Length: 82
Image (cartoon, rainbow, N blue to C red; front, side, top):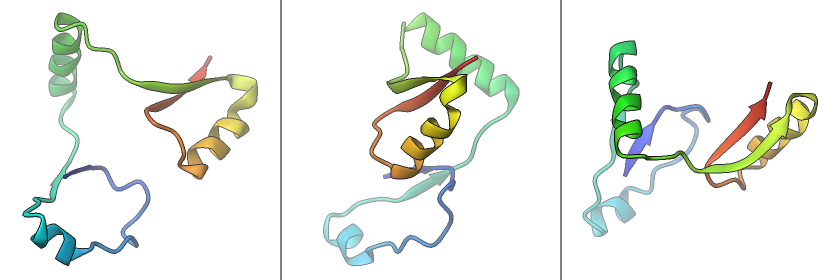
């Protein structure tokens, strides 16, 4: 299990027995540099990878986008069109 960022805070409990009994590994990663981001984008373009987008909102509906994100029922990115 790889944890990217900690936007929801540190209050979530980790079920250590579940990790151990399933021989799982929990790895935290941080974001890289701007150059690494550029390299990642180039690789994504080269392999024709696309992000998973759950839903797109108009800028006028930004409050609805935040409500959707807070609900946590999305799978993929929530986008706002400018």
